[in-house]
Length: 476
Ligand code: AMP
Ligand code: ZN
Image (cartoon, rainbow, N blue to C red; front, top):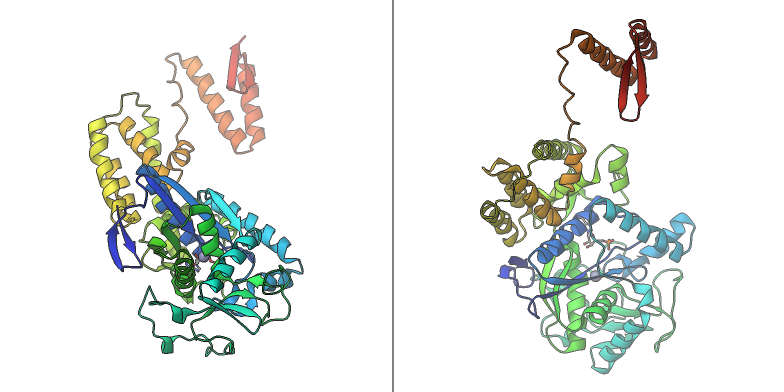
């Protein structure tokens, strides 16, 4: 499989460290509010990556953190802790907020068919391992104490800006409007590993540490949770594109300083979902959540399909008009599958035809996870000259990766068995026609007509008996 690696800025053949096994890490949500559908675009595309690796036969272990402490309103260690901000907004404790929005996040994931990672680790449960790694970084000379906080010293690295050609002078940290420069830092790009001196009122969650009572920085969480669960060699690290700098850049800096060798081989970044007015946000404009889409009558899996229709390395604009086009596409697709199911084909799967068709699907996903071409492969399959049983078997197989519940949705549309043919006997045919009319009247809640039909039949000596299987009759 070819995959674009943000580190080399090229598509590369994916080769894991250990044959047949993949160690995968995903930056989890900051649980101070609901996830917006932009956040969930990242998780949908990462889910497809994981499921495709499994489809290819890899034994995948995937780990995700839950950021419940340390993520400040600016990713560069400035501003207020997002969790504290959420707690104040809702007049609850930080842990109450964390529990509520973690549950809400996984409920959204379930609706979108996003698999829960093998390990999910809240940062607040991993404090010991943060302290252990920070202690080692200080001992190795990569970290220093200043003004009560512990900072990572980026000047100790041969190359700090690994993803792009940032220059230190271009870095806006410290000169952004409303953000004061942190004079404790030796270098502008240095970042906090452990806070004991907050830059905001008060931090609710604090732990004892060798450097005083405090709390961890956001970046150290992901490095430690990854290394603790997946070891010193990571195959693939995922996140939204905004995480590349400074978050992932800092993760690489501290992890490689700690382990003393290259840490992660492939970096997978999902580009943003935007609205017509720009970047998606939780604080301005319509706060687009899965629940909001449901309230408006959209099936969450239609949003999943909407994401799959474009490439993860292109930014995507959300509009209801675009989503409506996907509703139409999803309904047409499932209607065609329903027509296949209705044929009740019991023929065996044509393996040769299946192999040839499957090649198209794999070719799409092998090329840097081209999900829109994978959906085209699904249409090609529907048009193909092979039996319905083969088509249905392949749709089910593709859907283990696509996660669109295609067969289930189609089954709901399959029409009930055709009604029995009309009898040759005119009296029986009349009775059956009247029973059908009565059924339609009842469905339309026109009980007067329904009762009138029952009476008309009784006058002809026909008694109706309503059963769970339908209306039966007896000729007296
Ligand atoms: P957060 O909860 O803010 O830590 O973000 C969770 C994930 O969503 C991270 O991987 C972000 O990079 C990603 N993300 C944030 N905004 C967007 C967006 N508009 N589109 C896609 N992914 C996003
Ligand atoms: Zn992270």
